[in-house]
Length: 119
Length: 108
Image (cartoon, helix red, strand yellow):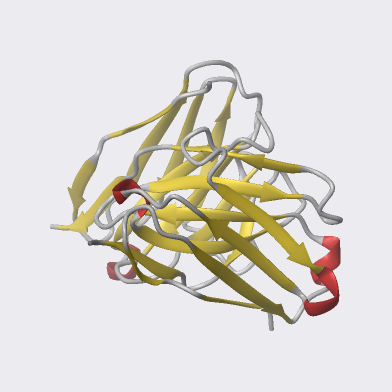
């Protein structure tokens, strides 16, 4: 059974930093592109970041470029998102998402880890 | 950037009704369009990929159509468990993806 379990969310002050993690199981992690998608409270879905199977290709949404860093450790079947210089608008539920490889459709989603921004 | 516009933003329908949600892209995206269902309190779930291909395990009452700029998600006979917010997603400009703003579906 495919599972994606996020962790690392919590309360952070504006300007602070945190690192989100996603532990994958039930599939060959190193053979899938992965993404982070976030959802602010009561709002829609926003794609945040992409990383290729090997980690050699990385992309970010303009809203997070320069502040977010995505990485992966295929040996540990884990995906990471480092966030620095946190802003109020970064408050959201962050989902770890698997790319199915078909039409770049996201076929498995974790339950999300919540980032709250407050001083 | 490609913009994705869904309509309506919300709708209310009765059990058994045929429901249609549309998604329009600001430029042609061929068939690079996926649909997701997000039930209250849950993570999104993939319903349709490549505009019209049904994801494994998804009930056959869900279908997708369209190409180019105009796409449709149809529920042939609305069921109570279909109460959710539905999102379209373009995957043409990979890997910079855009979602529609969502359509909230309720039971009348």
